[in-house]
Image (cartoon, rainbow, N blue to C red; front, side, top):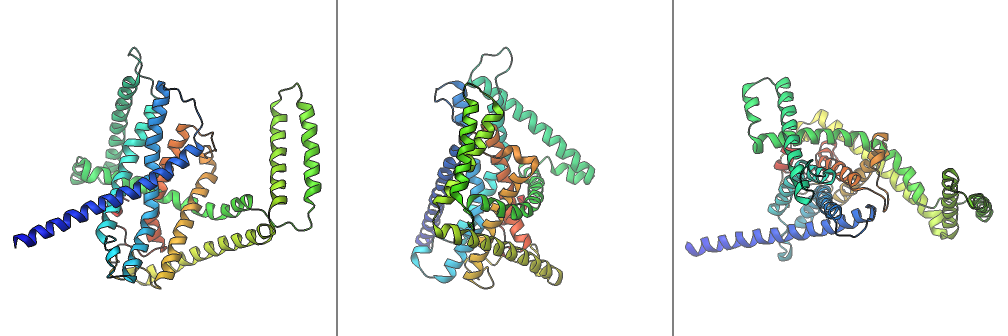
Length: 416
């Protein structure tokens, strides 16, 4: 008996170590990719080891961590679907036994924990730390800025606590519900995160239709459109003449309007030259194929949502709360197997990309649009928070709209 107990404890220990290593490797990959993305858009600054450079570097690392968590929230649902299909296809394969329900649920719990940490601690700290200068009369330095940042965080926590407490009193004037708010970890933070996730879900519903319509315009700008009865050489020649005329007018002058007009003409010339250098396949086939894919993805998404609404009207088990968790690898999470699983994964990524495009297309959030090598750290913090809110709402919204049949992990669903 004792040997059996030791063997079970050893197996549990090795399983936990294996899960920690896998989680670390996955997060390391996401962190490296996030760092490359942020440094691509971050405004280049001097490399002097002064106080501001240290503050910017710390804020950069915190933003990278937040963006990595957002990526984890986006990839969790596809990873769960792929894992279930692999386990069903190879149920007794020794080399994939590490891919189990314990690992999946552990990833859900970690993403839920880190989402709360980034949203309520790291991102406010990064913003206040970036804007802090130290209290008046105190000695300037990193310590003074850290002290001011913690004071601002404390005041912000008191403000949010008071707002949520008053809102709870107005909505549900019950002694038990009021006292439950004093339980900071078990009730207050999940309650606050649920409110923010609700706003994220509403924002996702608002941005996705805009993004679906905007995707055609964006792809049209990125791809080379078919050239039918167009003389590109003549257009490029006219652009060259306009560019030379503006350059002659700019000699010895520094007029902002003329420089903007010159930049526009140079951009037009670059686009025309790119269209001229494009291959025949890129000109005549790539653009229609991509537009057809976008149209097909949009149509399938709308049809799946419409069918899910019909299921909700006639079947209670189709409700997210009414369905049961079938477990990872026990039964297929998709009705038509691997084909539907692949379609669901593609539609989920398409939904996320469309929501991000729609978010930056709204006039309210146009100021957060990142620009290559010219984005301030304050704007990057705003972008990371926005993407984190959208990505945290994506699994629940995909489940609610019928884009996926995967049951969201209880800890993540309770916080969303």
